[in-house]
Length: 99
Image 1 (spheres, rainbow, N blue to C red):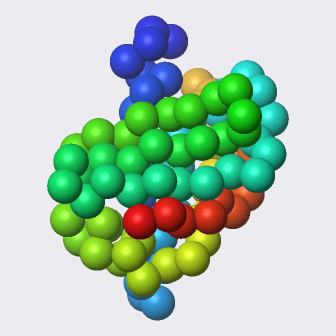
Image 2 (image 1 turned 45 degrees about the vertical axis):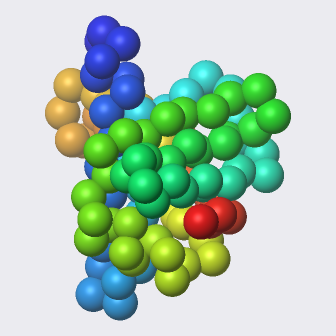
């Protein structure tokens, strides 16, 4: 898997307008995570722990609007396998939303 594939992410919004972030699993374990939103740049930084940050760019306006009302964001880090059955959730955690 190349670096561009590792940097891909997706947001899912449920019927209650709750947002979940899906991304590839990172090597280090998350701790005291926070999600810092920059509305002007339509981007955010997921601070996973004191040494690991992920920049997310080009976030859709609808996602940003939904996140503005949230205190927490559910994050699922996935290890993607050859098939859906081979894929697994490595880390699932909440990150504080900072707008």
